[in-house]
Length: 432
Image 1 (cartoon, rainbow, N blue to C red):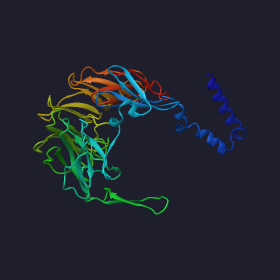
Image 2 (tube, rainbow, N blue to C red):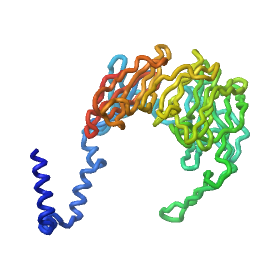
Image 3 (tube, helix red, strand yellow):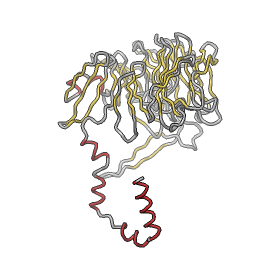
Image 4 (cartoon, rainbow, N blue to C red):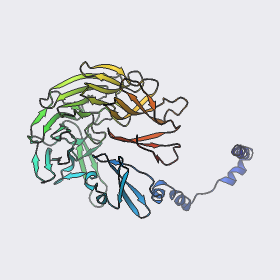
């Protein structure tokens, strides 16, 4: 009531005596005023707060490491969630994760390398072709030979975003990579002149524009690393599109692809240029045969989630979890891969699943984020749930009235960060 009385008095004065109010409140801001305000902005204040934010980076063995700022500088910490053991140091090397957490680079301008799951090899691009290097001996071997300018292997160029790293997906046994030969010869050129000290520098690269009849195309291939055998998938070239954005590498990896655990089959999704059609397919890694399992057609645009791709492949049970907005809300569906038909709808209701974060095939449990399910709460608040494959056992795991952010390492563990109030810093909670 005190604040209401003050607000009333202020409004009374302004409306009753406008000339006086303006004369009393208006003043000229100075350079010092702006400088004082700038000192309160995030980039100036954040360095003054020690150990403010922990962002875990998960390691292959189930541990994670993070970096925090302290009064004496940076501190690196590695944690074993299974035992609770911690080890800290001033550098990544001191805690023993420097090599595992750093990107690798191919020689002679080859760009970033993609390391195999067993950590013994990496593939990289050089002269539009794909190479592999043994990390123990540093020996290189050329895997492809027919890559040419603008029709190279594993190249990362969507036009508006590009890099020199290879876009591949290693098989679980570290013996094959799924990738593509990218044809961008038929699309427009983009030019950019830099402004810098001295002479300007001209950049030029391929960039699909609305006037182009076709966009960049990818010819999907699977390459055997030891033999060098290239298996071309028996299908037409795909548009360079994904189910999450206008690129097949929204996440930085080869999106919408998933190997079977035995590395014998590759499940993937082909998306059309306009995103109105998405086709779920399975390829035989040894023959290149492709089977179309089912397709999703929409009148507007199909997306598989918000911030992450929401489909998972389960060859052991011949199933796939699929995301769809067919009932006007974003929900999960369980498909039979033998028939290509829906076995059951997993989630349903007037609310939306945004991110599927973890799936345990053994217990047939899904952990996911969703918005708008809790009555009387802000529909933009994100909450965390779990549910069974058959749609039973739905459970709210974050009942607090607020926004919740979840970070996970897929199929390993999930760290929960809760926000009681969006203006407060995140408070770490126990793992789920």
